[in-house]
Amino acid sequence: MSKIGTEHHLSQGTTNVDSDKYTSPQVSQINIYPVKSITGIALSSSWVEKQGLSFDRRFMVADMNGKMITARDNNQMVRIKSALQPNGLVLTYPEADPLHLNFNDFSMQEVDCQVWSDQFPAYATSEEANAWFTYIIGRKVQLLFTGDQSNRQREKIQTNVSFADGYPLLLVSQGALDELNQRSPKTHTMAQFRPNIVVAGTKAFAEDGWKRIKIGEVEFEIVKPCARCVLTTVNPETAMRSEQNEPLKTLSTFRADEHGGIFFGQNVIAKNEGMIRQGDKVMVLESKDKVVYPDTSGDAIEEESLKAITISVNGYLFDGDNQGTLLDQAEQAGISITSSCRSGLCGACKMTLESGNVDQPDAPALFPGEIEEGKVLACCCVPKSDVELID
Image 1: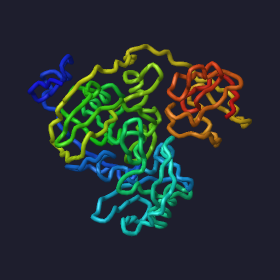
Image 2: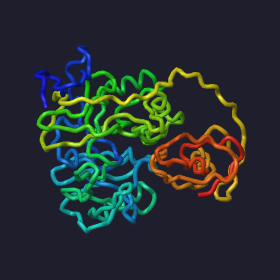
Image 3: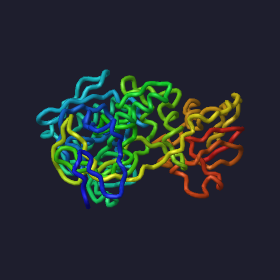
């Protein structure tokens, strides 16, 4: 492939990713999240492995069957902070004594675990760690460790991955956050999106047009846009969810595809190991066509008047309205509906509409024809009349 000898290396036949105004993209943040779903640690440099940044998402809280537990359903996890030590970690939580995790104390007993649909062996840590997280989560859980090299092999990307949702790394441009904040009634922080690498000095969403980049010693491949979930609506400081469903509400007006998926940032894999540092220049080796998302932010939307309705979920009746999602209203009424992503991605909350009408947008977890068959997702459908649903 022919290369152009400038700061931005682009493949032949492609167009410039950025205008002359943005000529120095560079790394402004490097973040790791030692335990999946807890607060991140900002670093000045990091060693990059194929499975992700060193120490990133090497631990995960799981139920006693090994299934992942995240801050999507347990918002308080975002208040857990960590500090790296030579032989382990120190974890802190406002209402608990610090937990000192020493690698040498781990039992390392093999445990079957599950992240989404991926099933693979991980390793037990300690009873002390299990008890600490059990106190925070409010039910019996365990803390698992990937080991030095994760056993989770993802054939789709031909590499092993830590306890991250699906890809080893997440990259976001500062320009993307700035664009969101210009559009949103709320001011959002990068911590809500949990990126590993933040790039400054680019136009908004310049990363959408990157295919291969190099930072420091490492070449990266940008694989796909990152679909965002309800965790972005959780305040990283207070663990409270946005009542206005921000930033997803604003992002849905200019970063949503035809299926209702909302995208912010790019999933990335490393092609080799090496060191990256804050301030490193980002060299674009190859570009690609950007995905074009429809911008509906200027569309006039007529507000629907509030109407009281009756909702039946698996035979349990409660009073509701035609404004909130079925899942939110059921939970407010004390009725449990199985859920996970809370944004139409996983299908855990799929139900059958027996009678009545709901507003059900297209979502990735609904397969072709399922809406016509009466299938709905409790996390994103809104009842419009008296309804009866079963799971």
